[in-house]
Every structure is written in structure tokens, then in C-alpha cells.
Amino acid sequence: MTERLELLQEWLKTGLGLKRYTLEPASEDASFRRYFRLRHNGTTAIVMDAPPDKEDCRPFIDVAERLHACGVNAPEIRARDLERGFLLLSDLGTELYLQVINEDNADSLYSDAIAALVRIQTQAEAEGLPPYDEELLMAEMELVPRMAARQAPAAGIGRCPTGAAG
Image 1: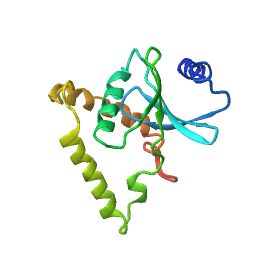
Image 2: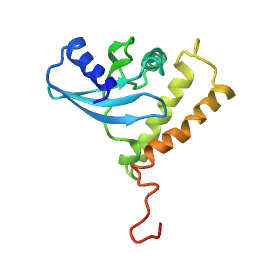
Image 3: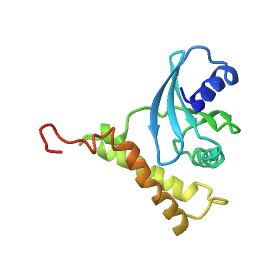
């Protein structure tokens, strides 16, 4: 077990008082953050692990609060330990639009998504957010090769098909 995972479990047990629970990987993004689905007493939540020497949770919290303020579905922050880089978030579920979209529901799903984008664009407070400029774009683009390298083995990229010369 990694040191981060041990710290996370200590926070869940002593900081949040959870005795029996399970953790499973939920998703990854192109940062140093990791997300786990926590199952406890028949409910689920998402635990974010953001190593404080690499990630600052405060901008995530700030943006989540801005999205909630304009009525957009975003994770609710249920508990936090900023010193150690842990957040307990509401679980938005496992179904992605791509997995459920079909001819019967496409118009409705796209309408909901566009309405959320319009609310963000017209109602979300942007004051104090850093500008999304060329410097920030380039910093994020530098994350792409690392993210691709992490996801390639799970997607079967780099493996030779059976019977192929290698």
C-alpha cells in the first residue's frame, strides 16, 4: 500500500469516523489527482487524493462552488483536509453521456448539456479566476503525453495483436 493511500485511509477512519468501507478507483484526469469511489453503509461518495506538494485543492473547491451557485450539477464538497490534500465529494454516478446516448434521448441530453454551458457562460462568477491564456494552455498540453502514457496499457495500446510479428 502506498504512503498516500495509507494517509487517505487514516483520514477516512480517524478524520471522518468511517469504520467499514470500500475504496475502488473511480477515474483519473490529466493531473496528479486520483479519485476513488467510496462505498459506505449503502451509499457512495468520491474521495479525491490531491498530493499538496503537486496540487492545490482550493481552486477545485472554488470552481465547484461557482458552478453550484449558477445551478449547474457539480460535485458537492462534503469534507476536506486541505493540509493532506483530501476531499470527500458527492458521487455524480458512473453513467457517461457517451455510454447512454441514443437516438431516443440525444436531443434531451444535448439540450441539458447546452443549457448547462449557457448557465456557466452567463451566470457563473468569473472574477478572480486566472485567465485561460497561451501559457496555461501550453502547461495543460504538456500533461497530455503523461496522461496518454498512463492510459495506453489499459486501452491495449502498445500490445501486438495475437499472431502479429513483433
